[in-house]
Amino acid sequence: MTIAVVLLSGGLDSATILAAARDRGYECYALSVDYGQRNRSELVAASNVARSMGVCGHQVINVDLTVFGGSALIDKSIAVPIEGIKAGIPITYVPARNTIMLSLALSWAETLGCSDIFIGINAVDYSGYPDCRPEYIVAFEKMANLATKAAIQGNKLSIHAPLLSLSKAEIIQQGEMLGVDYKMTVSCYQADESGLACGMCDSCRLRRKGFEAANVSDPTRYK
Amino acid sequence: MTIAVVLLSGGLDSATILAAARDRGYECYALSVDYGQRNRSELVAASNVARSMGVCGHQVINVDLTVFGGSALIDKSIAVPIEGIKAGIPITYVPARNTIMLSLALSWAETLGCSDIFIGINAVDYSGYPDCRPEYIVAFEKMANLATKAAIQGNKLSIHAPLLSLSKAEIIQQGEMLGVDYKMTVSCYQADESGLACGMCDSCRLRRKGFEAANVSDPTRYK
Image 1 (cartoon, each protein chain N blue to C red):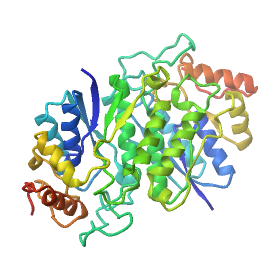
Image 2 (tube, rainbow over the protein chains, first blue to last red):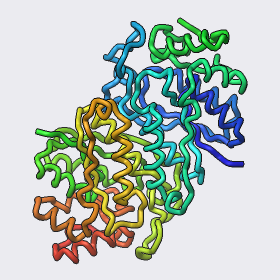
Image 3 (cartoon, rainbow over the protein chains, first blue to last red):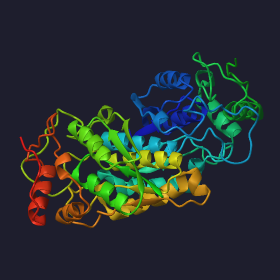
Image 4 (spheres, rainbow over the protein chains, first blue to last red):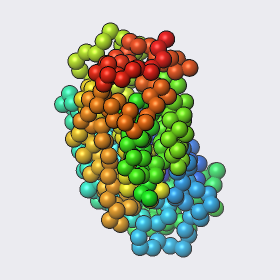
């Protein structure tokens, strides 16, 4: 079987791509990143999702991005917006987060001798983040194919972002077909320790709207 | 003054680029990465170099790459080669290390509102690492210019690798002119806690040869 490294945040999107990667026949190694995110319960959710999907391995790697700050997700003095989704890049954007996560996945992939990395970003129902755009993923893949020993040896690495052009509803429908238990996932930017969602942040709004549009009962546990 | 983020390992090359960036008029923020490297004294050296060069700030960020392994620099069960430099990529290569470091620098740069990152890689007297090649840096810069909010807002980010095409001797000569105190730097892959170098690993050999070729007295403290 071919192996893959799957970035797993514990949210809805990454749980879906883990299921999708498994469905495509990959043996999956799940990678979660503890970057000091406000929502600590997503890391617990990631562990539960990884276990329930029978991954070959799950690593949680620590990178303390709070020393840099600059985002409501890692700086508790900046409030998470709850007024509804606005145009532009919101304060929840974490500088270079996806680049750091993909770089860590690249490192593990190379160590494992793996040529496939999955990331659950999507460019439709997203929050205006620059590192969720298709052209960004293409550029990362190109860079990664110059960065590693494997690349020099002719093993092409692929970054898979299968949710890139799906709506949140389509993602949920795909996950439902693949048997994802969304009750285990936590998307809220400021969920409490037990994983209860605020229902008001952009992430909660996108998720709730997604379940409605998908005509799937929303299993999210709200405060 | 324009600010820059400078990746500072505590070795000879990065000390030189910190001096070079300062000489070009940048206010420098030094970033060191504790990735679980065998040589712990290089982080002490990085702090000393940062302080002596009067940086605006110095951060040491922890990313425990030992969980991935796969390199003699982070896995103590793999011996550092001491037989001399051979063709090919040595076991001291750390998978995706420069990509991870540049990604972290990108994050800090964006938070600081900074458009210039310096990295002390070079492609001449290097050890065959894939992520020390000019085409890799070009690809990283291109990716970085799609990854960030700053890029969307039209602020072009530059990755400066001014040592890329210099020999070790030329780097040392440049550093001498800029007043770098190489006694403070540690290049050895397996220096002991007090910074004493083994004199036998590839990094020690390249450094020693560099001082000889530059006709500069070698201040390295060997075991």
